[in-house]
Image (cartoon, rainbow, N blue to C red):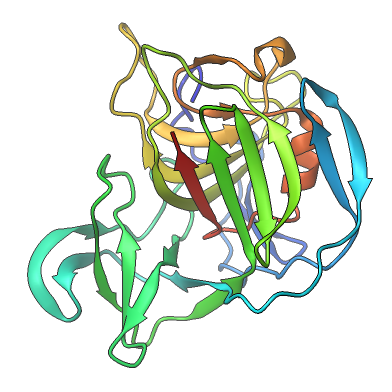
Length: 267
């Protein structure tokens, strides 16, 4: 999370290469309907070298595994999230769109119940680790084999596919004053930025917020994985909560992280 903390600038929604992407605010234009997330092809992978985010190397593609893919659901409107499938107390709300850019929300379903009629989800933008249930009937679903794991103690972002590590990047994390909050999140925005931006060339908004903003902070509070115009900060605890990665890392992440892709942050 950085200056403006994923600023509230509404961009146009464009369908690019089968992936839903948000255009920079200068582009404008009308919104398009959401496209189903694409499953990343099995191809040679790029691995960010620890200690030098500008260096990459190629690894073999991972072998097949017997793990189950992550399930994602296209949220068609705001809906209550309940403490048990089909009932119980209301623990929160599943928003219909992302916090600032209003992209159609694609939520990660942690598990299903009652023959797939209900899905367990995290509460987007709540600042809570609480989970609850939403009805899945009538909603479009998709799957992805990709999961992002963030190790805050090691300043590392790890991408897994079929339970195999396919990429690993050093990252800047939240400072001691505004530490990155651990939790289970999912990608909610894909936002390109112009050259030399404070956010680098691209940002992946996620469904978490920073509840411990730095003193005097006047920006937003949404968490994100994004680039930076200060590469020397990568690998250190210096941000307001977001995860800063290199341009090489962004290039690798763009074809892998669709809307709804799980992002698990651990302390």
